[in-house]
Length: 356
Image 1 (cartoon, helix red, strand yellow):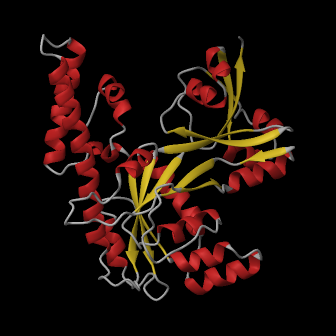
Image 2: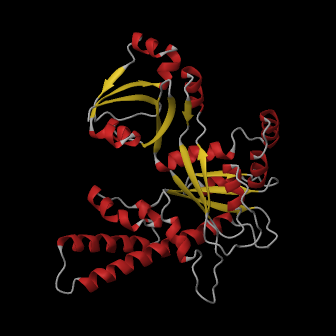
Image 3: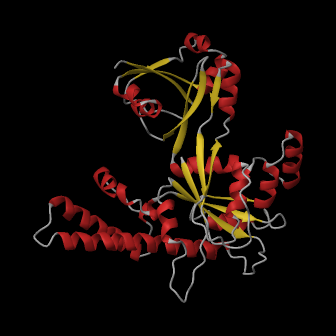
C-alpha cells in the first residue's frame, strides 16, 4: 500500500511524515526545490498480529506494510501560470495507491491565513487540471492517429475519455464515476489523480488541536479526515519509553497515535482488510481488497498458490482467541474448508492447499 502525502508548501507534510514513520527528514519552513520525495516503510501496528505472535511464538513476525512518500509542495507562480505541483512531481504522485492531503491548521512564520478548506480547494483544482490535460492530450492523439478511421478499441477509449473530460470540466473527480470492468482496465495506464482514493490530515498546532471540531466535521463531509497535532506527534514518535509516551498522549487527550489513526483511515479509504497466515516459522498479516476471494488471497501470498489452488483452510482470529488453540477451533466446529469463490473476511486466518 503506497500513500503519498501532498499539500501546499509549509503545510507540515514532512512533520507529519516524521511523526508517522519515526524518520528524521529535514523539516524546513521554506519551500524546497527538490522533487524527490522522502520515503519510509511503516508497519501497520495490529494488536491481532501481536496476539498471534504470542500464541504461536514464531521465528518471524511480519506486520502489513505501508509505504509513505512525502512529496514537496511547489508554490504557484501566477505570473508564469505554473501549476501547484511540478510535472516531475506529478509523475511520482501517480504511482501512489492513495493520496493523503495535509492541510495547515497552525500559524506559519511565512505568514498567510489559516485556511484548511481553501488549501483543499486549491489542491482539488490542480488535481482536476492535471487529469484534464491528460484526457485532452490523449483524445488529440487518438484523433491524429485515426484519420483513416478508428478501430473499435480506439473509439471506445475516446468515448470514455470524453465522458471523463465532461466530468472533470464539471469539477467532479473521476472517482465519483462508475466504470465497468473493461473500462477500468482501459483506464489503468493513465493513473488519473482524481481517480485515486483521497483522505485528509488536518495538521494542527497544539493550541488549536481539537479546538474546532466543526472544521474536521465539515471536511469529513467530502473525504475521510483525521486531525493531528503534527509537531507534537513528531516529538512523541521519538520517545522510547512507553510510559512517558502514554503520559504525553493522556495530556493531549490522544487515545491512539497518528500512525494508528492513519492506518485505520487508509484501510477504510482504500477498502482494505487484513487476513493472516500463522505457524511456528512465521506469523504474517496480508492486506487484501474487501470483497476479494480466497484465490485472490492466495495470489497475494504467492502466484503459485493461486495457480494451483485447491482449498483454503480457514478460521477466524476471534474464534481462535475464544477457543484458545487451533485444536479448540476444530473441536468447536469453527474450522472450515473454503473454495476459490469464498469471500475473505477481515481477521480470517488462512492456509492454502495447492498443487502445481
